Structures are given as C-alpha cells and as structure tokens.
Length: 334
Image (cartoon, rainbow, N blue to C red):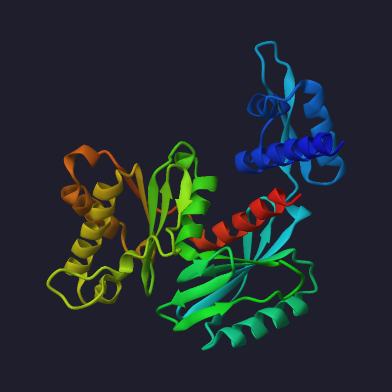
C-alpha cells in the first residue's frame, strides 16, 4: 500500500509542477509528459481540482476535428509567500502567489542589522493579517541553502548567522539574489525554456552572477559560485564591483563589465547572457555598447551567444525567483 500511495503522490507532484512550469496546459500534454494513462491523469486532475491546486481555464482546439480541450492552470490563491528582497540600501517586501507572480507591498531602508530586519518583517507580517506559508529571502551574498545560513554579505557586513523560524516550523527559504534571478528567467521567460547554460549578471551596489549549467543552478562546493564582482581588475588594486561607476567612469565601466562577461562566456561556453540591475535604468544605447564590446572580446566560437537585458523590471527577477523558489518547495513537499 505504501508503494502505491507513494507512486500516487509522485504522480500528483509531477503533474502539478508541469502545470506550474507551463502556466497553462492540457490533459493531453500532461499525459505526454508523465506517460500516465488517461484514467490515471483523470484521477490526478480530479484530486488537484478537489483540493484547489488548479483551475480550469478557457478551452482550445486541440485536434483537426475541432475537438476542444480544457486548459488547466494553477490556482493563484492556493499559496501565499512573503518575499523579502534585500539590497544594500533598500529592502523590498512582496506578496507572492502560487502562480509565481509577486505584488510589491513596501520598500524600506535596509536596517543596519539582521536582527532589526527580522523584527520589522515579523511586525509587518502581523499587521497584514494574512496567512503566509513561507518567507522567502533574496540575499545579496553567499548563502548555504541547506543550513539556511548566510555566510557573508560583503556590502552589508552581515556574516555567519542563521535565520530562525518566524511564523511556523521550516517556513524560511533563502538563496542568493543572482541565483534567484536566473531561476526566474529560466522558469518564466519563453526564450530560456530550451536553454541549459546561461548566466544572469546582476549589477547593483555589488555585482554578482547566477549560473545555469547543464540545466541546473550551479552554486559551487561552498555556495560562492558566481561572485564575479570579487575579481580583481588587471592593473588596478581594487575589486571589479568597487571599480564600476557609470556616472564617473562610463567608458572604463562598460569595458570592464564586457571583459568580465566575455571571460565567463569563454570559460563556460554559455548559450545566453542576461543582464539586470542598474543597467535597465540607463538609455538603450548603454546596453547596445556593452553588448557590442562583449561580442568583441568573446572567442569566435562563442560569438552566437544571445545577450539581452532582463525582462523583469518593476518587480525584479530576484523577487520573482524567490517566489518561484517557494512554490517549487511547496510542491516538492506535498
């Protein structure tokens, strides 16, 4: 009986995750993905409907005979996640939903200490009078996701501490902001669906990168993969991220960013480069010049790599990624 029950649960998880990852889908597509029989798919869908995990949407023509199939989608209001996006100067709060979308709630100055931020988060959640299943943090630093320990946030000077549960047991999720940004792009951007090797360069007060290698987020053996901002600049006695200044040193800044991105492309043979953060606030000519220089410095065998600015603007990719992180954890733990 346990084996049968476990198989049923795994089928439910697999089907639900497929629906979430595809936004909208049909029974036929779920069946093709899971290799389940029509009767098994019916049982799974009935369970998901009965427990408010999914909803029926509009019907589409799915055959040459005009037969219409129901579209299935996740129930946005099944789950609420409190999203905290920490940056050096400001911290944003958001309300995340089961479909991976996020509504911005509030922006505050980033407190001097972690304990102070915890107190503010706890108080603000209480004032909302809403039931949040997880609190999902986007952290500008090195995060041990297994032990929920923040190992280092160089620009905040928060180091070696763990998040304790605030609203219930095992309610806290943490990850690096750049990792969450590449996660958001992978899950929610159409042009990333078939990409397995990509990088998200996040340019803020510091500079970090999230790596997607062989279709998995790569964190490194000590969770510090992607800390590109800590490279030292040739001929300069400063770290890359401390050298960058668009206002006072525009030409050198563009050139240095392009060089460092080209190093990553040449080293890892990447398919896609996505750039986010401060650069989206500059005129389009800034990105065009950056892209031109990246292509100039990239080895000829890699010159077809696709380079673009992030599609997430008002709600940053790191917040979407933090919400998606919570949704995936929730599905995995059904």
